[in-house]
Amino acid sequence: MTLHPLSPALFSPSVQHLLDLVGIFIFAISGALLAVRKNLDVFGMWMLAEVTGLGGGVLRDLIIGAVPPAAFTDLGYFLTPFAATVLVFFLHPEVERINRAVMVMDAAGLGLFCVTGTTKAHAYGLGLTFSAALGVATAVGGGVIRDVLAQEVPSLLRWDRDLYAVPALLGATIVAVLIHFHALNALGSGCAAVAAFVLRLLAMRYGWRAPRAWHRRSTATEAQDQL
Image 1 (cartoon, rainbow, N blue to C red):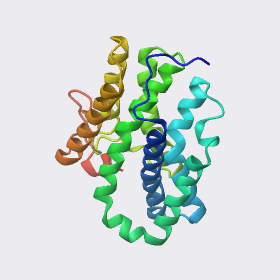
Image 2: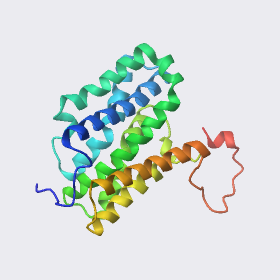
Image 3: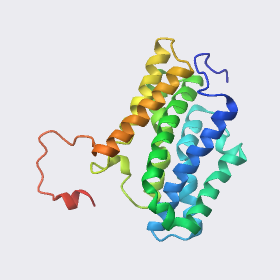
């Protein structure tokens, strides 16, 4: 498969690989922490860590035909969630106490992955709209799989959670627009990642949420909505 010429790496390959591992590690921590809250055993913790860290990228690679997925060709990708599981297994009370910092790093991973997911999808020949959609899926797919396995409504579908998919959509859309105007470069990619990151931070800071149905009439209580 020939890669598209307008799909530059955001950073050098070695730096990009390191950032990927950091992003996977942070996402995997959230999966392992959810497993602790669900009272799962260490194997359950590892599984939720793996799918949270790698699920979005694996989904993207399978759709675009980049097989085997990168997660199954690089041992570092596969073992990073295991390291996150070990950390949470022994130090989960301490990790919970710095959860705010983890969420900030998660927002950074969200910004990075929505950009790299979009550029990789376009590099494999997808149109701009579908590339952006896969960019979003790369960023949020692992969390959706995590929540489904944990028998929870996925966080990005719940009105009572701060914006998560929208920042990823913003970053992916910026990349798609830059590609359309033949203006995608490392600087533009970085700006797209920062835009998604900042929007996610603002949503966390001010509790921004996506609107529900217009003129919604329901007798359900707020507590029922949050179940």
